[in-house]
Length: 547
Image 1 (cartoon, rainbow, N blue to C red):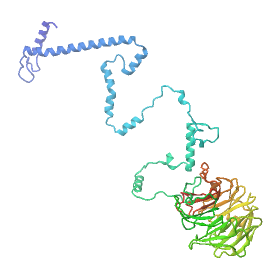
Image 2: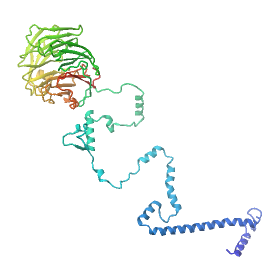
Image 3: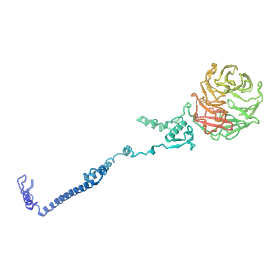
Image 4: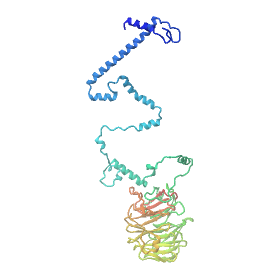
């Protein structure tokens, strides 16, 4: 601006009229004095400097923009597009770019007030990115060798399954686990886990945690499918032998098991499942034991031999061994197979030519004899000791009355050529008949007494050789069947479903061998069997809490 014009403007400002009509006077006060000339110069310099800086800044921005546009012309289109996505449009200034870069920081500061749980939830729900590429080798299923692994080899269903995929192997492992556990356990089911939804359920949980005691109880009835059991120390581990075990029986009132065999000895052991210490052994010279049995009250032990007519009676209270050389009226040359009545009153001896003889258990005197057609194969008392069931070599079953010694009924065991074994249940409900073909027919006792041609409730066909041993457990929930003609030929049948427990015997171990005798403890807590190798194997049945 020219100096002359600047002076003119200043004079006009000085003489400008005020609202009150006075020139150069302040509003509402006396007139203001003019500022010195040096002060007016100091106020004008900052204004000029600010104007010059702003003009220079604008010029610099314009030059930068022109240079950037010049450089952008030489870049490929892909690179320009990528820079626009990252840094924004080219025409944006640097301040806008800095604001964009600071935006995530501001967002983080705003979210800093959120709780850690909310942050963790946000991190868990981040959007999933798609893979940039797919490798074909990842899609190929890796195969697992089954033949060279001794654990996986047992899971092969046929010889062609040399290799399995990982998914198929996982399915097989699940099947093996469910087979061993008897199904899917409750803790493995996802829908079983429930969280408390109201205050009442939380109070119940608090009340549960405030009390102590046994909150786990076993089922009153034995479940089918899998029998939970444990292999215990052999009953005769403290007196080992190589002779065949002919008899194994638990004491009816004490926690004692008796083991007898062809080594001429009867041994008693204390049952604890760990060491089974020996209590006593009775040696009978030149007397290989065919059968040994406790009396009903447990005070006596009776034993017969394979080639003698002598009956030994061992009085456990007095510690005396009493031989019964001859029974008046009994004309049998060899006394081997016998049965003791459940009430302890009678002793039944199986003879030859279809005869079986009833003796008094107290005096060992003959009460009477009964005869059936053909050879007598096996006999047993009913649970009330009032009837006798006898199986003949012709496949027929005879039912006799003990008091009158008359035949009450006679029927043919269905499908049997000749019988080998027979047993009755403790509750008086079942009669089991074992035949030479490996079939076990289970009948209802009432139908055996009333019908001339009763039909079996179930035919158990899990054995292929002659069934030589049959034993019901005291609760009538298990029927043990065995054959002495084939190794590992023993099964446990669940009642009343009449299905075989799938986990016994463990065929892979093959430690049972040929079974000659079996028995359950008085309350089914233990199960024992004797084999031809001189071992009395014993198992703990976990379903039953007592001996």
